[in-house]
Length: 216
Image (cartoon, rainbow, N blue to C red; front, top):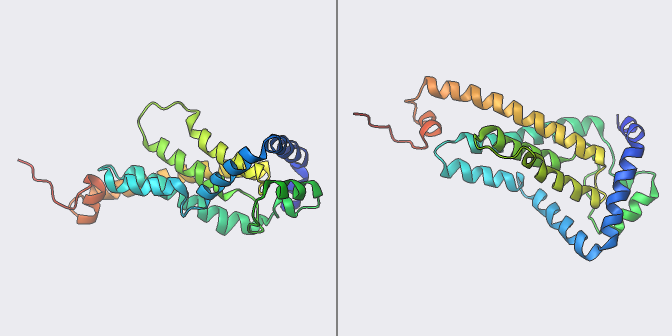
């Protein structure tokens, strides 16, 4: 599978990595720190969006928001790290036979990462978390915002030469599927919660309070 990806996406991956390398090389003192900061955000447990989901879960009466964000990220992490990465086992760009990738990676000053590259876990988590929020929210957000943060995260990974662009594309797809799978699970859970609203834990998910609502 890894060999097929490297062959099928060879020209696509090389052209995009080279494009972003040239941007980074034009002002490395500016672009490299930015990419490294984004990389650090992606390394945080459950990613930054996961912490935001936890915050939403505990401060909002509607718990679906936090559940969608956290659940989507966790499902994406399981699919990515425990299934696809182990099956595909694609080495990082700087580990490939293309010496230029290693040179560009050294210029970017990126650290060594786990051997497997496809799909991008950072991009999967970013896409899953942000789409999880947008699937829950009834606000009329511009559709392009769904992809803005995951794309920025993905581009930073390409600039550091720790992922192929096709890894980023794979992460966007897995993150999207994870969010819709989470939506299905959350909707099924809420059917159960609504069926037994007096159960104290279910009441918390429905109302944001363990106390029974008093109606006159």
